[in-house]
Structure formats: structure tokens, C-alpha cells
Amino acid sequence: MIPRSIRLMLVASLVPATLLAQSTRELNINQAIELGIANSKNLKLSQNKIDQAVAQLEVVKDNALPSASASFMYNHAEIPTNTFSLGEGSSALHLPKRADAFVGTAAVQELVYGGGKLRYAKESTKLLAEVARLDADKSKEEISYAVINTYYSLYKVLQSRKVVDQNLESIAAQIKQAQRFFEQGIVTKNDVLRFQLQQANVTLTQMDIESNRKIINYNLDILLGLPEDTEVKISDPDAALKVAGSLGDYINTAMVNRQELKQLDVQDKVADFNVKTIKANTRPTVGVGANLYYINPSGSFIPPVNQYLLPVTLGATVSWNVGSLWTNKNKVTEAKIQQKEITLQKDILSDQVKTDINKNYQNYQVAINKIKVLETSIAQATENDKLLASKYKNNVASVTDRIDAETLLYQAKINLEIAKADAGLAYYTLLKSTGKITQ
Image (cartoon, rainbow, N blue to C red; front, side, top):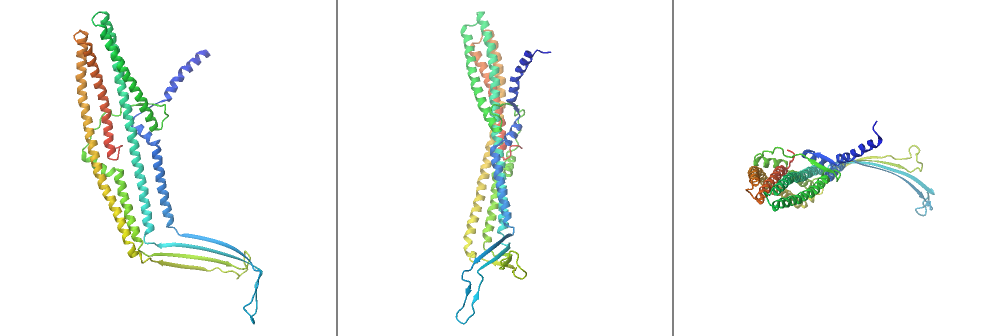
């Protein structure tokens, strides 16, 4: 039987570990993107715009349905002068002192032909709903890229911190070695102080990196909708760098997938329906209707037989604003000019997309080449560091040469990790310019 005091100590020792586990979340880049999309407030706003467009479409559909109305009226009249005469020699007409009447009407109206305006309105509203969906897709791409950008920023900071931590371990070993050499009279006190100064400078760099890590981690928590004190643990987002396809393939993909180009295509169709709707103003309209009347002057809510009227009428109307044949022409011209403007906007945007993709494509190629150059420089810096370490041990090289060689090596390592992250981000930037990050 474990004593109660020991059990309490065991529980207390487990609490910090549990709290730490609760405030840490390990995510790969795809999981981060999914989480950012799921919790994005901007996407929720975009979905609300889609719902509004769909609701507007239902309203337009309702306008094509027959209209119907009904009314029922009760009327009571007091008649103080109830004797009426047309003049001398004519008999007087005696009216009741009061009268009651019930009157009801019911009507149904249907527009049979309105020049096609209702159909054009329905199609235009469908296209506007499509524009809203494309806008939501564009927001989704923007959010995905924001998550990727922040994820890579955190990755760069963590990789830099890892290299700096290794550097500090190496400097600590150098300080111990320099102290032994100083005790043996091989080096001067200045050598020990130089290594200690280097340690202080690297420690300051470590502090700056940690501050940046906290800032970026907080921003990522906000983007992903996580609790603001969650520490995000990330995996290597680019274990193997992607091989880019041809520039032409990316441009062709963009011409198909870019949401802005799709939106302009849809807006061009909307403008076309707008032209047709204006032209429809020159056409006649045809409607049919039925009316039912109930007239009960008996004064009783349920009248006696043959003391009420129930006529039914059927009718059709044809109307045509003939003046629109010459007053509508300029409106059509104006609508066509607006449609042409959309076509010109698409041409301009297509050129911008091409130049954007070319720039991102070249940036990715440069980023890949930088990695190759830095890998070569690390090999050279490693060899130089080993050589200077050996020379320093043999008291051939100065402490300055030894520190410089080590600094060059770790700076090259940091540059390589940053270059790898930049290359990964450059690849996603290239994909974003095609309109489809998750290809």
C-alpha cells in the first residue's frame, strides 16, 4: 500500500506534464492548412455571401410563380334619411334605416410572357451565386497561403534556433578546452575571453530567435483557431523538394483555375443577360387572370337562397410599350459597352497572371539553386572548421581564426535551413499564382 503523501507527490509530478501536453500541438503543413480553413472567420463570411446569393435566387424564382390575392369585407350603413323622392307626382322610395353587406373577392394572375425578362433574371442570379462561390474559393486559397507562409516562418525560426543551440554547445566545449590550455600555459587568458565573448553574442542571437518564435507561434495560433498559448510543433514541410514543371504548364493551369479569371467569365455572361433583359423591354407582355366575386347584400353572414351574387371572370391582357422601340436603343448600347469592359479587364488580368507566374517560377528556380550552392559552401566551411580546429590545438592558428571558422560554418548551416524553407514557400507561391495551392 502506497502512503497517501507519496500518492499526492506522484499526482503533483504528473500535473505539469499533463498541462504541457494540453498546450502543445504537433501539425504537419497539410493539417495546418485544413485547420486554418476550418476555423477561418473570413471563409464563414464568404459562406454567408453564398447563402445570400442563393436566397436571392429563390426570390427570383418566386417572382415567376402566379400571384394570388383574396379579401373579404363587411360593411354596415346607417341611413338617417330613409325616404327618397324624385319630385312631385312621383312615388317616394322608402329605404331601410340601416343596411349590412358582405363583399368578397379572390384573384389569380399569371404572367404568361414578359419578353423573357424573368428567365434572364433567374439565369443572371444563378451566375451571381457562382461569382460568390468563386470568391469563397479565392478566400480559401488566400487563407491557405497565409497559413503556409506563417508555418514556414516558424519552421525557419525553429531551424535557426536548432543551429544556434548546436553552436552554443560547441562554444561551451571550446571554452572548456581553452581553459585547459590556459591552465597548461598553451594559450593566453585572452583566448578564453574571446570564446566567452562569442558565447555571449550567440546567446543574444538565441534570445532574439526565441522572441521571434513566440510572435510567429502566436500568429499561427490565431490563424488556425487554436488557444493562444498553444505551442505548435511542426514537421519538416519539405523533406524532398518538388521538381517544377514547365513554365507553360503553370500558365495553362492558371488560365483554367484562377478564380479572378473565372469570375470575369461569369460576369461577362451576366452582362450578356443584362443586354438581353434590356432588349426584352421592347417586347409585348401577355398575362392571364381569373377573378371571383362574392356579393351578399342581405345583411346575414349566411344569406338566404338567391340573395347573393357569385360572378367569376376570366381575362387576358396584352400590353406593349411601342415607344421603347426607339427609346431603348441607347440603353442597349450602354450595356454592350459595359460588357466589352469586362472582356478588356480579363485580357489585362491574363497578362498580369502570366507575368506573376513567370516571376514566381524564376524565383523558385533560384531558390533551388541557392540550396545547391549552400550545400557546397557547408562542405567547404566544415573542412575549413576542422582544419582550423586542428591548427588551434597545435597552437598554429589564432583564437580569432578558430572563432571565425566556426562562425562561418554555423552561419552557412543557418543559411541552408532558411534557403530550404524559402524554396518550399517559393513553390507554394508558384502554386498560388496558378489559382490552386493544393495541387
